[in-house]
Length: 476
Ligand SMILES: [Zn+2]
Ligand SMILES: [Zn+2]
Image (cartoon, rainbow, N blue to C red; front, side, top):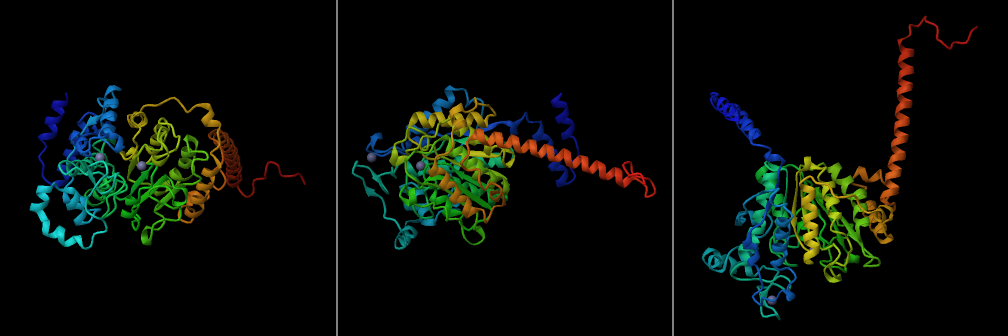
């Protein structure tokens, strides 16, 4: 049946480009539900970025992270429910969409190629670099710092692969070939700045992908949500002047005392990009730590109103899972449940016709990051988890969270109309909000029926001829 259909389409005489496009569209539509499938990407070359000391306990960002996530997703049958796409290494041209030529050459080529390629240029740049070359670490390995280790043999391949995987996956989602996607990648990227590698990151995969989508696929507006517990200083820097890429980060801030120290609520972008950087900067330390209620409230009162108003064409998520419980203070300290990220993912899926791509960033507690990845992919595949437990629904966000959110709203309401409609609902529980919404609904329905009645009366009055006496006209 389908064969005959195809053949009849193919015998159409293709006279011009337009007709050809129509034929291509028909062929694409015949492919069974390609755009309905979630995509996933993972390549084992990323496992080889390892410190030569070989001791995981020195280096929380190790290969076991993505290996365990991949195993978990396979075990649960989620990988086979997705379309697995082939990753590739990003090209130097792609890296340079965000990073300087020097930075791209230094970290993006292996030592042999690096010498062949452009050693003179590299050396010429040395005078202007802001960062020292690799240093010897106390563990016996090599790195730009003790977090950000470097393996001369494999790190450049792994770092380029992480970027290329996110580009490939996001391109397929943006072009409608896939419904949404999850990238199981490392090393992470959101701390990498134009010419600085730091915090486990060399190349900013999500930022490079956003530039790629804009330049190569002509995507108009891109939302980047960064829910890693650390601020994505590199991503913020890459789009600080850009009104077409909205960067929203939720992170532990503590008045600049938490790594990397950036991401204050009054960092809002500059020039044409003013108002397109949104920092939800949690303060107040761990007294008490932020959890599900605080993150859900942030989404309800800030992230989703602004995101809906921005109305993106694609959503990229810097999906670090170090806010999940199980991460001790220097690398987290919060108590968000893995399952909460299922609900956050579902909310984002209501944007951009569901074109949402999650790329792994931080998180090193293996159980936490496996649970959270599973919960997110479960959402991307269109599945539903049980609703949140009753105690989460009844709990109000803690006062530090309320203060942090009010601060962001106060600063951002100048740029976003949607924030002006939510002045006083930050300190309510989910339950309160639901009953408020119900009340509002009832009021709205009552008002609507009132206005219908009035309209009805009006139209009755209008349809009356001038001489016609009114029904209730008092008798003279
Ligand atoms: Zn080491
Ligand atoms: Zn992090």
